Amino acid sequence: MADDDKYSVLLPTYNERENLPVIIWLLVKYFNESGYKYEIIVIDDGSPDKTLEVAKQLQKIYGSDKIVLRPREKKLGLGTAYIHGIKHATGNFVIIMDADLSHHPKFIPEFIKKQKEGDLDLVSGTRYIGSGGVAGWDFKRKLIRYRHNVAEEFINQNIIKMGAPNVTGSFRLYKKDVLQKLVNSCISKGYVFQMEMIIRARQFGFTIGEVPITFVDRVYGESKLGGSEIVQFFKGLMYLFATT
Ligand code: GDD
Ligand code: MN
Image (cartoon, rainbow, N blue to C red; front, side, top):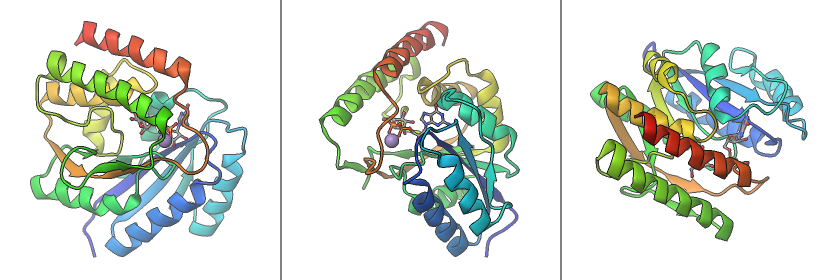
C-alpha cells in the first residue's frame, strides 16, 4: 500500500470509442495493483464517434471519483486539452498520456518509482534508451516519426544542446505545481506543446528522469496528426526556436 500521493491521469480523446474501455480497464488494473490513489480525467472534444457516451458508461462502472469527465464542445487541440484537464486535477501528480493504447499503463508504476527515487520534478517515457522501442509502425507513421526525429535533432543541436531526450514523446509524469508552472510559460498549442514543455523544463532547471517505454502504434482509429497539423507543427517549431 502506498502513501498519500494522488495521481491525476489526463486522457485527451478524439474518436477513441474503441480504445477508451481498454485503456481505462488497464489503468484501473495497474493502479489497483500498486495501491496508489488516482483519478482519470477524460477530456473529449465532441468526438463524432460519441466517445463521450462510452466514457459515461465507464463512469457508471468505475465510479465518478475515479472517472472524471471534462468534455469540450469541439476539437480544440491537444495542447489546450491538457490545460483544460489540469484545471480539474485534484492529485499532487499529473500523468499525461495518449488514449489510443500507444502508451501502455503498465509503465506507470515504473514512472512513479523513478520519480520517488530522486524526488524528480518530471519523468518522461522515452523510446530511445534501454528496452524502449517502436512496434507495428507502417510507412505513414514512420514518415511522421522521421519528421519528429528531424525536429528533435534540431532542438537538441540548437535549443537545449544536450543528449537525446525524448522531446516529442508525451507519456509523462509531472509534479502538479511543476506542470502548472510549465503550462503557464508555454505559448504553443497543438502537438508542439509537448516539445516546448520539456525545453522550458530544462530552462527552469527542473529535474527530469527517463523511463524506457515501447510505443505501439494504434490498432483502432487513425492518428489525428494530419497534414495541416504537421504544417502547424513546423510553424510552431520555428516560433519556438525564435523565442527560446
Ligand atoms: N481532446 C482532444 N482534442 N484530444 C485529442 C485531440 C484534440 O484536438 N487531438 C488528438 N487527441 C488525442 C487522441 O485521441 C489521442 O488520445 C491523443 O490525443 C494522441 O493523438 P494521436 O492522434 O493518437 O497522436 P499520434 O499518435 O499521431 O502522435 C503521438 O506521437 C507523437 C510523437 O511521435 C502522440 O503521442 C503525440 O502526442 C506525440 O507528439
Ligand atoms: Mn496515436
